[in-house]
Length: 261
Length: 317
Image 1 (cartoon, rainbow over the protein chains, first blue to last red):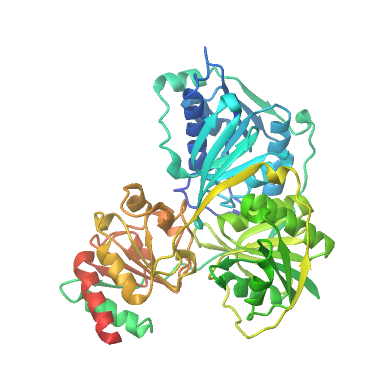
Image 2 (cartoon, chains in turn blue, yellow):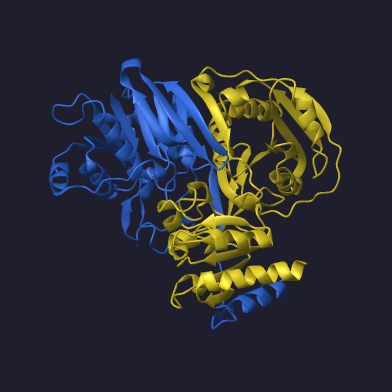
């Protein structure tokens, strides 16, 4: 199997974020591999490990695909140190400020070139939190869409995949043939920590960095734009009481005063 | 005047709360058409249930594909309808399903997409609260039909009676929309409690419950509230993942959010910070949740909540 995992470098989710000129300020904060993409990398590793493995002696490959600023290589390296085989990174000044529509176009362009069987993604990035790129990829590629997977079962012999789709509405079981776009929810697995050996090996793994024109694509301006962004006033500190037996009563009175009871 | 299309979803035998919310947001910009996607023979009955909210027209599209193929089938139907009718905007609820339908529609009709709006203005400018609610952003779609997903419970619905005209439409499903098939479906059984993202009041429990949600549930039930949980609680297996509030769970914005035994890590706050009123009960006086709480009780939730529950019940009777 030839598997791609789409990954994104995002500002650390613990960092305070702010907007500069209508765009998220990515310069002033620590950049990390999107937490939720680690579950997709882990799931790809588990899929190949259940069927003979990847890397040296394995029949399968896992390629990380990412679009982002030049320093995206740092975040992608983490996925390689977990065990992916190689990476393709698209970085171009013309892509600054891309929306999900543009991002999905670039990723689909890279994927369509390479005859993958499966593309795995996290459900969302922790910066934009849109949850739309996997569905856009499936639409653009004309592939089966198996998204919000809480479990994935792959049978390479029959090129088929069954997932449980787990959303706020309920749990569906879905089935499709390769090629598929799969997004996985964080409940699906526990991503491994890169081993020292993995970290050393990742330094030698192939990482292709391309500009847009090198892959035959043109930049597209974003189809939505921020008009203005205003920090909301910090919340004034509220009332705080220490429970010495009357905490429940105080809470009750507060709720009554606010007309909730 | 703009033509605004909304996706009308149903919850059991009634229109979802989001139908009137989307219609109310859309009506500021123009005339609202609600799209009902139904199984064959079921459309007229569902359309007949839409009797409130500023909706001028209901378009019914019937097909087995909406259940069998889910999101891609719905997206094909809506994309074809809004192209044929030259819609100015398409609004859908911000759920996993709604966002994915919007994503595929936006690609098909070559439109910009905005997700998680908390309001939509008369000129189709969307308001979003980002970075855990710390920043208000106004955005506009600049290309094609404005495809916008709107968070449930954000818009105060206009529930005035309406009697929309009902029309029928058909669509051609694409080959690629039929590639993934739904083999079986197990919708979450609605308990007696309201749906988390639609609830007016949410009572959530975290690490401080030590796995015992009974007092949290009892307090929630006394208030008619939904029950939420922090990631610490769902990761520990104390409460179902579907109830997780936070960065990687649900984003909620109720009138009242009661955080019990939740420290208030930034990831949790990202999912509930825009609640209108926040109450916290926590043993640790330095827990960050108190920084954003309108009212905080420093104390043991197992002492505070039962007393409060008793009090609510006493005042009701």
